[in-house]
Amino acid sequence: MKIISTQIPEVLIFEPDVFGDHRGYFFESFRRDIFEKYVGDIHFVQDNQSKSGFGVLRGLHFQRPPFTQAKLVQCLQGEVLDIAVDVRIGSPTYGKHVSVRLSETNHNQLYIPRGFAHGFAVLSETAVFSYKCDNYYNPSADGGVIWDDSSINIEWILTPDQIKLSDKDKNLHGLDQVTCFDYENFR
Image (cartoon, rainbow, N blue to C red):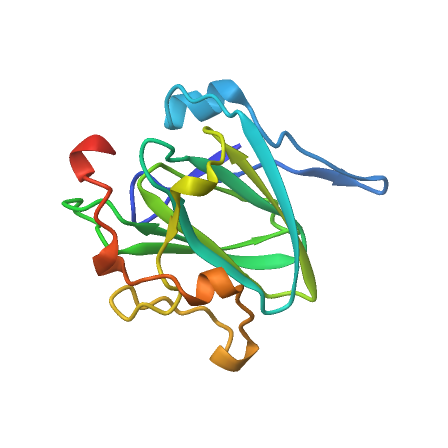
């Protein structure tokens, strides 16, 4: 497995070694020893999966403290543009984001630590997306940043008229309204 650094040091891409032949393919999708070497001791407690159609944009979501979540995400079918935004006030990379294409073809996974907002947009006809989380979901701790916040300036690839949002995601606030993540607590 190859570990790829991003412009935000805490956000990592895990690229598996894929072995394929006339029967199909095989790869290790998770190895605790490798993961702990690069990320540290983490215990995933919940797996989630979503299916979405072309243009669906989910995000940018987070769970407020003390229910924050680190995630290991991957696209099992189709292709998505996956985004992680640093929302840790005082961080050297505050307000910056990582943008990665995840697909059923590249099999890559993105690790998103606590203190980051996360979202993705579906680029294929449909996409099945998987999340491993290190904390249980708590609906009362739901939070997020509006997808088109100009201070973050994400290039979503899709045009605004192609993007499909939930009512919840249409009503998220700007990054400047997120005050619950102090860098010192999420290093």
